[in-house]
Every structure is written in structure tokens, then in C-alpha cells.
Image (cartoon, rainbow, N blue to C red; front, side):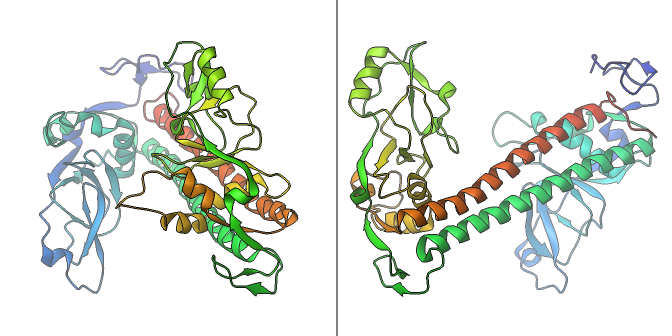
Length: 409
């Protein structure tokens, strides 16, 4: 905080143990401005009580049950005290029961707005104070000794309101993304089984499909279905990229994250069909299963065996339609039938080749692909926007909660 410039929003600063801060701001420690206490143990009677009014129970991991016996009324902060969610922060504004694996602020000094305190603790990140050995634990004394910067109460209110408004935008955007994902899933199920504008249907191994469609094995519409190298060449500092599932992103291979191999190894693997071509459908078949996209890059790259290379007959099968099918519930249902054992950790090429796929005309494949891809692009745009909003909130918290940028009182 020593680098806070005097030129942004302030004319007067003062020295403090945390560096220069706005002249009207104070510094205190948490135990002087609030009282932390643990919740009470939950019991089956509390959790399973048949009450007329449901009241959430908070532990270290958020809502865990419902009860009619609230411990606090409202306007409090809950801190995960122990376990996996140690350090989690929640603002409570409804009657709530707090379990003994959480702490909560029972009393807040009049000079401190609870919502502002919540934002300050969220920014401070109490989880960095948890114990390093055994089960993670937050000690009340350690939390109590945390320094807090306290602006005038009016400024606290405005800072809290600004950050809350950003959260509302985040929540709305996340809600919209989830709705678009649901729409995509529904449209995939609809279009990949009923198509566009059909009125007559027939029975097939995949259920009812339009009369004009056919159901075939995937390899019947492909030139080649193979995978990458089954051995991993020795890595070098500079060379050609070799990709695995970990290097696959939503619609491309992240070349910068790939390991490098010698040109001799690259050439050998390329001769052995381990190099993808434009319009190939890539599909992750080992470890993380189900990542898929149409390869559009011009990079000189080869793949390891965890990625399948599906080279479609472009006259018979649209690669985008094929990729969409591979991420559809229909494919998941079909591949599940080939599963052996308790968990599906990999899909073998033999099963991919033999999977059944519904085939419309190439023209209808194009239309179906465009509809679903448009939804996917919309989701991607919203996710990019969401990422920007989250980055904005991080920057705002840093600026507003340290006094680097100040709102007018």
C-alpha cells in the first residue's frame, strides 16, 4: 500500500503502519470493532425439524440444512472456521443458524458498516491465515489481530454499494450463461434427433428420427479415425509442439502450453498421421473425456494418444455437426453402453468408430450446426464478459478498500 499515489482522488494523506492512507481514514484491528463467536453444534433434531418456516443453517461450506431455531437474526458475517471451506466469507441478512464449524460476527462497532466489513474481509482473503498442518483451522485470535482500514461511514456505505452492484451484474451474467447452456443442451437434443421442419418420423436404433435421415456407424462417414502418438518423445527446450488433453481449450489447442520435441521426432510422428489437419475433429478420449472441436489452426503440431483425430468425408459429414454430436447427450448415452468397470476413464478408438450417429442431408447438417454454434458463441461472449466483470471487481476492491481511489462522501 506504500505505492498509493496522492494524485488519485485525494489531496491529503497521512502515514500509517500500512503505508500512506487517506487523512480521514482510521486503522484498527478486527477484535476492537467486532466480536467473533462460534456457532452451536447441529443435531438431527435441528436439521430434520419439520418447521413451518425454513431457516438456512450455515457451516464452513455455506447452507447445509434447514431449521426453525435461528441463532442470529440478520446482518452478520459468517466465516468458515474449519475444514475444506476454512476462510469462506458470507454476508447474512436473514434469520440463520450457525454451526460450530463457522464463526460469525455477533457485534459490529457503530463506526463500521457490516456490508463494508464483509467486502473488506472478502478482499483480504482470510484463508491465507489458516493453519498449515493437519485439518485447516482459523483461530479467532489470528482473525482478531487483522488490521482493517476504516473510511468514514458514508464512504463505507458507498463502497459497499458499488461492490454489491458489480456482484449483481455478475449474478445476472452467470444466470444468463446457465440459461444459454440449458438452451444449448435442449437444442442439441431436439435438432440432433428431430432436425428442422420434419413432420414424418421413423424408428431407428437411436429412437425416432426423420424419415429422410439415416443412422450409420461413425467410421462409415469418415476417411480416417485415429489418435496421436502412443509414445512420448523426449522433451526439448525449443522445438515443435506436441499436444495432449491438457493443452485443449474450448475451440483450439493452446500451443504455448505444449511441450516441445525435436524436429526429427516431429517429422516421424507427422508421417505416422499424428498431425491434425484443418477440418479434423479432435476429441479427448483419455483422462478428461469429451473435449471436442474442429481443428482450424495452421500451427505445425502433433498429438499424443489421448486425443482422437476424426477426419470426416466432407461430402457426407459436416465436421461441426460431427463435433456437436460428440458433445451431445446422444453420444454420451451411446458410449456409456460400451463402458466396462465402475468408471469411464477412457474411450478406445474401436468404440468411437462403431458409435451410431444420425445423419441428415449435408445441407441440414450445415443448418443445424449454425444454430447450435451461434448459441455456443453467445455463451463464449457472455463468459468473456463475466471474466471482465470479475477482473473489474478485483481492481475495484484493491482501489476502493485501500484508499487508492476514493468515492465522494
